[in-house]
Image (cartoon, rainbow, N blue to C red; front, side, top):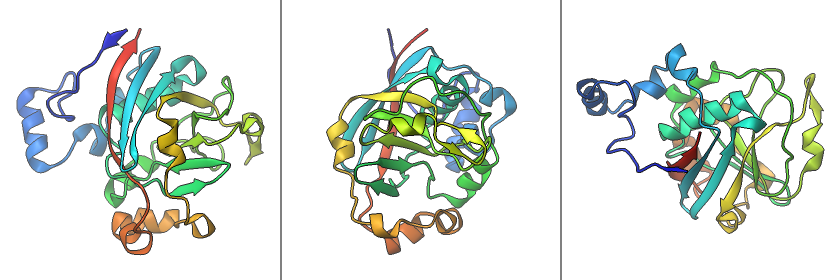
Length: 225
């Protein structure tokens, strides 16, 4: 395993000149997120990698497995390397089913990434407790939204919806599953509107769903090639 210390700034990326990185930082914008180029999106992730996800409830660790979903894990690598989920609310928690996040609460950023969808892939892993997968709403609609299975949801492996079969896993919780079990779930009977999140962002969630847990940041801590 190759250990991976956190960069001085999340926006300083391979191939980005230091001066350009400083300019991006000064503007408070990360070009890899707000202006993703085709070459950025085509970067292949390691065969597997570890991510520490810090949340308002605590930190959990995920191991991503590229052989389960190459396109999906390549996307997760890009998003988590660039701290895309920082500030995102865990907006859907259904006890005995899943906990879901992936809309950042920044309407501009969510609008940009809504158009960067992924091709469908076969389901290789299984949606067992602690396994992560992309949410979707039909053919080629996976983009940034992830969920973690709170119980064994094997039926999701082959569940057909919108002409697409299954929810391909991308990784599994290695430590901290109790953190996910502790996410605030009392809004289950009135889950936030995704359209409202896209339009009004975290302002809407702070006003209408103030007790939602959130992601503080993500850190890639190691990888295998």
